[in-house]
Each structure stands twice: as structure tokens, then as C-alpha cells.
Image (cartoon, rainbow, N blue to C red):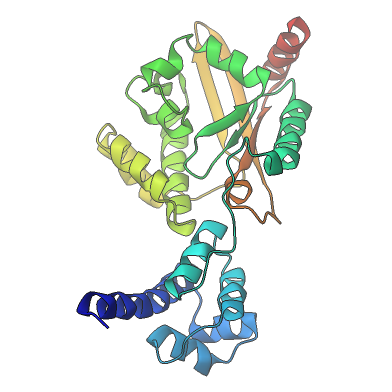
Length: 276
């Protein structure tokens, strides 16, 4: 066996224990907690983390399920331990994704006349309904071009220097909450793409927003108040996910619906729906 091959084998042997310990720590579980929740002995969990025991494919899937590891990272666990990935990451236009995408379309359509979008774990907008597109047009026809073009990204929409921050009247609340939520999701979901987006946008943020984000307490719904050209909009968000997804792409999709928080906003969107 060559030296390079031996190094690769050694590194692979070290990779799984590190992944297991990292995700257990992320979930704030002790070895005993994980053992009890997964039905595995604490001794075996300890041996797996130290590299003294090698995991089976079944054990990897069992522990990663208990720790609620995203499917993309479960594939990484399997690869690190020398197994082939199990979960496919099909593109949205793959024929086998047709049922999922039809379900997304139905959910977005059923949200009308209120805005709704489907986003991935980097908060790229993968699909949007008509009210969301109409609301975006109200904020500027060139809005997405101003914030960088390419993928329409929700974080860039809010935090890009040419984004919608000037229209958000409760920014002191929304800004830190959004930033903190994105940071938490990037950490808990292993979202390297989101970490890249945050690193790019951080240079444009004022210190007050970033400091406030450190202490922001996450809330079940996010209130959003905007005003442009005298028109006021008050919304709150509700998020839905595919809880039993067996495809990486579907596992990372979320449906975010914006509901009116006052009578004026409700009448506005109902009126827009009638005109549409």
C-alpha cells in the first residue's frame, strides 16, 4: 500500500468520528443522551467517536436519524465511513421530482392571494407564486438586478446594500432576527452555501445589526413591516417543510408563506388577487 493510500485510509478513519462528535455537539446531546435516544449503548457511542469501533451502514443511518442530520450530510457520514451515499440529490426538473414539485405548486397556489415562496437551504428562491412576484414588482422592477442578479436569494434581498432594507420600517427587529436565523440554520443544517452568502453580505452590515443578531431570540413567526411611496404592508411568516423527504433536494426545500398582519394588508392582497 502506497504512502498516499495509507494517508487516505487514515484520514477516512478519522472523518466519521469527527462528524459524529460534531453533530452530537450541535444537537447539545451527551453521549448518554444519544445512546438512550438511539437505542445504542453509551460504550459503543464512545468507541465510535474515538475511532476504536467502525460503524456499520445501519448504525450510521440510525445515529444520523436520531441526531436529525440533513440528508446531504448523512451521505457525507456514509462516505466518510467508506460506504456509498444513499440519498440522491435530484434536480428540480428531474421526472422523479414531479410529485414533489406538483405538491409545491399546489401549496404556493393555495396560499394565494398571499405571497409564498419555496426556498432551498441557502435561501435561494426556487419557486414563487403570483402575489410574491407582484409584491416584488411593487418594491422595484429592477429589484433582483440591483441585489446581484443570478439566483434570487432572500438574504441578498434584505441585506444587500441595494436591497429592501430602506423599505423595512421595523428593521431594528427584523434585521437581527433574520441574520441570527440564517446563522443558526447554516450551523444546524451544515449549510456551507449559506455560510458563503453570510460571509459575502457581512461586509455590508453595520456593527449594530450584527451585534444585535448575537442576542436575538428566535420567534415562531417573523413580523415584517414595509412602507414604500406611502403604501404600508404588515406581514408575518409561516414556514413548512417536507418532514419525510428521502431526496436531498426535497429535504432542503421549505415553503415560506407571508400572511397579512392587519386588515389593510389583507385588503391590499385580496384586491391584487381580484385584479390578477
